[in-house]
Amino acid sequence: MYKDYHIHTFRCKHATGDVADYVEAAIKKNVSVLGFSDHTPLPDGKWPNIRMALAELESYVLAIEEAQKKYRSAPGPELTILKGMECEYADEYRSFYQEELLGKWGLDYLIAAGHFFPCDGSWIGAHSYIKGKKELFAYTDHLIAAMASGLFTFVAHPDLFGHSYLPWDENAIACSHAILQAASDLGIPLEINGNGFRQPMIKAEDKFRYVYPLEPFWELAADYEILVIINSDAHAPEDILANISDGYALAEKYQLKVTELSFTA
Image (cartoon, rainbow, N blue to C red; front, side, top):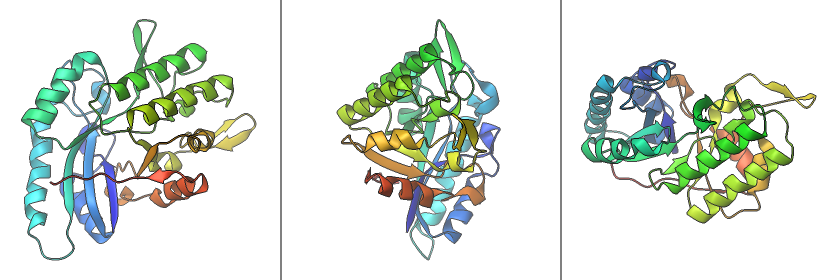
């Protein structure tokens, strides 16, 4: 039986399918735990093109709860369905995450994701704009602040910086050590993200590599007492469990300790 805690729906505007579509696909693939974690809406409407609108939050939660009720009593293999969100960290969102998402809507977990981070007074994106030491260290500091906030159950693709910071140099190594040390100190799992395996490879330092997972990062992780969680980061129903086997192979190569989450839906 398989578990996948990183699933998106059409509401984020760059995925397809709704909750019921993913549940049906999960049943066919013998999944035992399916965790929905779409990109959270934000109270100030920031980054609206890649996340659900605040007005869609209720429909998202209700669709998951309807699926929970349907499949809790359905015949056949047991399927646990969880309510989560993938979140950008900022201190001004703390009350929204705590009081609305975890409180009012009863989400099971929140994922920290450093798609955006502050640098020189502006928010910039990790996918395209980590071009030098300044941006790389700003990304690292922000991701560690998210981990230290106590809001999040695990960190999605901590090596996302590899999407736009191409060299594996002393700066990348230093920032990787800092992220890994924080994860060890705080006891928060880091995700090997299957979606990176499905992205076009990029040329860096005269060779082709995945944008993430960034293998040298996970090689360094072998020296730390950290937990690793492996997910598909599905953006279509057929993506459920996609490339999870690649993630497990990477974890096995560097003898990383894989963990699972425990919830009661």
